Image 1 (cartoon, one colour):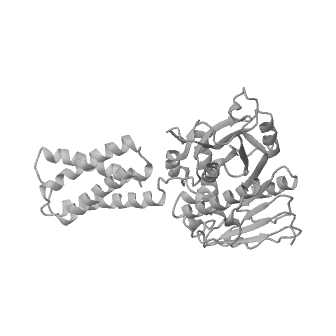
Image 2 (image 1 turned 45 degrees about the horizontal axis):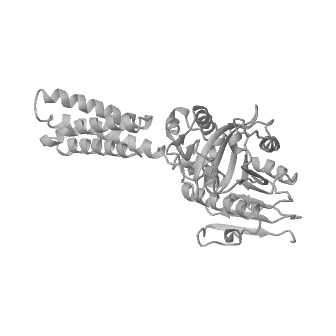
Image 3 (image 1 turned 45 degrees about the vertical axis):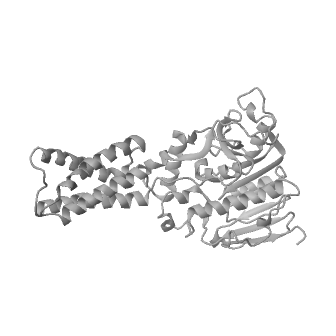
Length: 405
């Protein structure tokens, strides 16, 4: 919960408790609590914005403030006896209900990127049928964190409602999320060209469900291309073709001649993992990663990272052509790989989520996916994280299958 939300609830709980405990003779100084709550409420509404989870407290604040104004013209003390006690209950119960609602569906923060670069983001049209969010390394943030556009928020709410049964009206706080990327910031000049990663979109999930990983990978020195929606006509091959023909004078000219198209990787969540495997078989990419995919693993001529849910078991591996990593983490199920796990601490009840802390899961996913692409898109790079067990991530198991096996 946010600062002034906490202060507002704290004052209301104190007010309600005092009405019950001091029912027969409430000290005069406690009469300023309704005024204090009203002032905090104004600051909260103006600075943080209202949200439905706080509605019970808003009603309490308005009711107690109005009551305090009326009493001010009659007496310096509150009513006595059972009436004061009942009013305390009417203040306390909605306040506790607000705590429960705010805890179940909090205004959460997206995980902070862990790489060495700051992150920029732009929405770019790669031709008439391909609209993508581009996350990229920048030398310093512009100062303005990118908010989520209305369409993305609407699509994400619809996804959460359809997949998990959360009412859309309960998800208003999603629109208050901010990314850790700076909108429109300049691409870093540290390197002349940057390695490219393409996120294979899922048919049943919007791009917003996994923007934390995109930002984290960008902070590690990759340009990450995330198609805004799934479109069977906008295949990853079409995206690569568009990147190869970017006009330096066009709307996407800021990317022209800054992309290292000899070092392109691809990753995908869930069922998109199957299309990642197909793309790697075609040889269009230098490396590929499936994240949360539970299907069979086919042999590919490129290095492959298979990040499996803990309950999926080990996939059959046969005729390995290139280095293949099978990674799993204790407490991470299919839902823990995406930002969906952050929506509510109650998500594990739904079955798709394990017991791992969602921010820890995000850190693990970013570390291993980033290390994998860093190693296999840059020849000669050593990434000890991919060699075996790590003291930094003791909950992770990793199996390495070499081509000669």
